[in-house]
Image 1 (cartoon, rainbow, N blue to C red):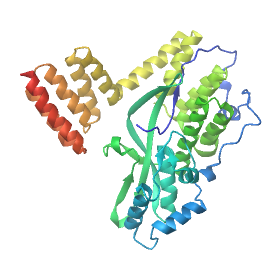
Image 2: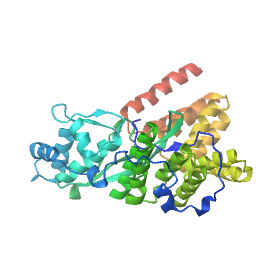
Image 3: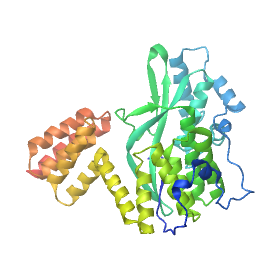
Amino acid sequence: MPLMLWTLLLTTSIGMAGVDASRISPEELLAGTVLDLDPKAPAVVSTAEVMALSDAMREFLDSHVDKDAGCFFRLKQLAHAIISDRTLRLEYEEVTRTAADAFETKKANCMSYTNMFVVLARGVGLDARFQEVDIPPDWTYANDTYVLNLHINIHVDLGLNGDQVIDFNIEDFNGDYTMRIISDERAMAHFFNNMGAELMQHGKLTEAFMAFRRALAENDQRFSPAWDNLGTLYIREGHPVHAEAAYLQALRADKSDLIAMSNLTALYGRRGDDAQAALYRNKVEMHRRRNPYYRYHLAWEALSAGDPDSAIDHLKHASRELKNEDRFCALLGVAYLKKGDEKKFRQWMRRAEELTSSDELRRVYSSKIERLTSKSR
């Protein structure tokens, strides 16, 4: 899926200094006094620049949106103008850009695209706000780093016409995912965390640090992914105790932050503090087993190992947590078919068909019923 937010998992070996992490304050972490920062490094953009409406964007809105029309028609005109080949057809590029820069270059990732749309929508008087979306965990691996992709989209309040969700990853969008409107400050923490992670992967550690500092100090100090990434930056610069302090700060912001727990497990393990490593390892496992998508992952592994009973057990736990997830039902059907129970296979596949909002997936589930049952005879 398109990248929305990067959160990096500790993968490097470390040494420990004689410093107590509990004595390192958030302010000290954000000051970066122990880091060898480059005084000549260019400053990252400001929050105001990220959401600025340029003259070219204003001209675009004047040409394509009737500001006197009702909010529903303004939104429809704006969406058509952005998506249409004849006006502003953007090309996907894994670079986090300001709204004006994305508009000018016609290149954006999902974070930039979402931000640009919010800025344009507000430019024609629409009540557009950012939303966080609880998608299934989506991991990728790049440059010796595990990356967890998160997601953000747009909520537009249309008054008497209801509301509308705009999502630029529409192929994977599911209306059943939990969504919550967030403040602009929280959204900008996402933005600068994205930017910082990209800069860090390209070795631009000073600029990356400044981006993480903007995310936390200037926008939302309770945004735990930025603390996780800041901890990884400290690890890469050879300051594991400061990294430990950053991961602990992430857990103060979000006690269920699995990235911070996993990083602390690895950090304490390399230090030789087996008790602390075990403590956080157990917390990770406990939280994972409560996560329905982790159970879904375990079910796949069980099926691959020829153990449909374990797969069914994991999927039943997952389905109790998320009753309307079609993928759980479909895999549950496959697990029952592996046991030779065609009746329950059909029952769960039909349930998956009912739950999905995708016509394509309905056809897939229907064809699986035909194909798999014919093979089982």
